[in-house]
Length: 604
Image (cartoon, rainbow, N blue to C red; front, side, top):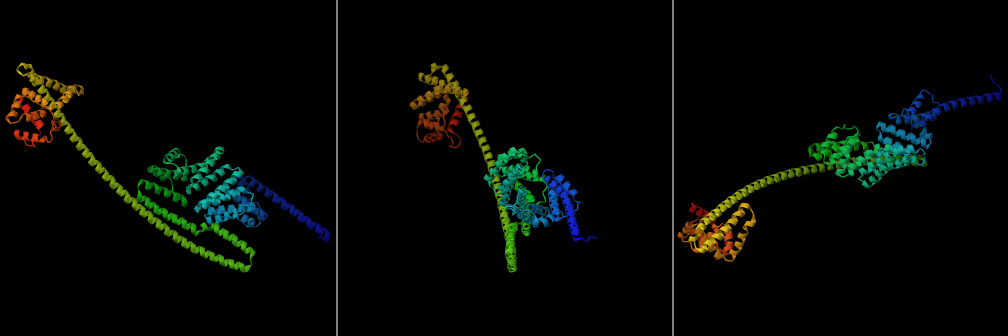
């Protein structure tokens, strides 16, 4: 036994020194491996995980080593896409760094704590963790973790329909990624913001960010993977029908994600190609995620509406409303929408607690409890109001659907009436064409008859001309002129050449200047060529003027033309007197055809 106090003191300090050296040496060995794993974390996360796994059997000697190991192991698992839902690994880091850690160590711990809460589905707790981490933004140097925190927090904002905050976080994260030279992650953040602006229908802001992203992708083609979904959403939302169709036809056969397929299906529905859209959406397996499921249903509702399948659209709308209500109730029940407010109140409460004594603490607790009651009552009122609004909207939509159905029915009736009117018009047109055809046939028959009469009259006049010595010179002259005119008219009717009728036109001009001379010459020509006909008229007591009047009908003029020629108003009175003398009923036949028929009968 050592009794000398000096020697005892020396042994004591020597023992402490030896133990310190041993401990420091052991710490250095573990710490070296932890440093090595941390340095490889971003470039080779699988190797970092292997190094950390090899330390599981090592007896970590102090809380700091345990905390650092726990944090690095959580980082390695996350970067190797191994999702954990328990705090078995991270808990030592939480216990140590929240009390003793640096700002960088705290933000890392908060970030991975939030990631585990997300894996568990506890988005409210995840939001609180990310908010706590973001509170350290002014004191941390780890900009990469701060950017990751902003992105993760933005994802939760999106689920809360806080699109403005979602855009803000992604734009802030993009600036941090730009400063760190991480262009691909910068592009991804900007495209997330583009999606937010599309939801807010802010085309100008989306245009600006897309232009920036296109410039970045030219320098970093790997970022095109994140740019394509944003361009797809932008084109479907803001493009014209031709632009949408050209874009969808070009990219529809690519290997697409479920979200991209739903956007393409919505685009085809928007431009009216509902069948193609339905075929595409039917190939998608609905996701269990509520937001994806809601989007899937909304796209299918739009397709059915464009197809006019309102019954299925209505049934899907009911399902959509139920899912949306459940999702909103889920958000409200977990207080995710109030996470930021709760965090602010909590921070204020903690600060006040540090400055006040127990009495003030009790008062603040009472106030806090009152706030909870108010929030709970407000929540109940809000939920009731939300249900009422949703019910009113559903009723309005139902009324709108009914109105649309009535409009469709009226439209169908109008289309039916239109088709009936078109059929009736077609029938009328058909009858009119048949009538015109019959009239044309009658005109043709009359024309043939008139030509035959002209030819007959010409032949009779030729017979008379052979023996001109027996006729008086005026009659011979009339017969010769008449034959020339008849030959011209026949040539015109047979050849359809108007030049043959020029002598006839000159003759017409002449006879208009001397009507009596023409009518007398015509009567003399008929007396020479058709003596029996003239005798028949004289036997019925017709005067010379009345015979002249009938001869105008005999040469082919119609009633209106006769009236215009003789220039006698109410010439139908002459026609009436002639009918009485000849014994013709006014309704039996026209004078022209009757006279030409009589001439033909006397020629037999």
